[in-house]
Amino acid sequence: MTSDAMGAESTAVEFRHDPAQARYSLWIKGKTVGFADYTLAGPDVLSTHVEVDPARRGDGLASMLVEQALDDVRTRTELTVVPVCPYVVRWIDQHAEYQDLLTRGR
Image 1 (cartoon, rainbow, N blue to C red):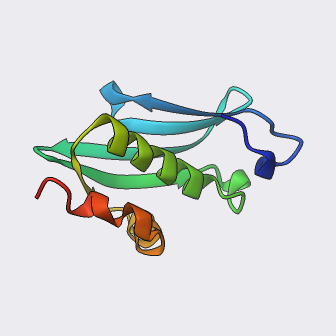
Image 2 (cartoon, rainbow, N blue to C red):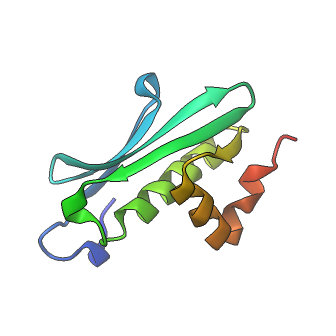
Image 3 (cartoon, rainbow, N blue to C red):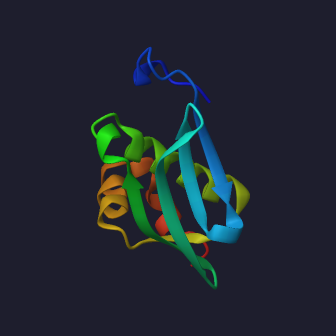
């Protein structure tokens, strides 16, 4: 994935999912710049923590990471998303198109 919004100095943005670590991560130029941790609990995926490199905050990376993680959950599973991380709670509140993930499968 690439993003023109990231500016000329950072052209390649890569999104990775590591199920063994229960983590989604965002990479730029071969370096991890953010991650989103989760926990599986029966039919639920609990979004527990999102963190972005302090030097990269304000670049929209946390939003990009949450969106990609939720898109992955939507397309790969039938799990219900339970936002535990305050950032994810706010993000879903502000993006109505993702609120169905909170109740599907119930």
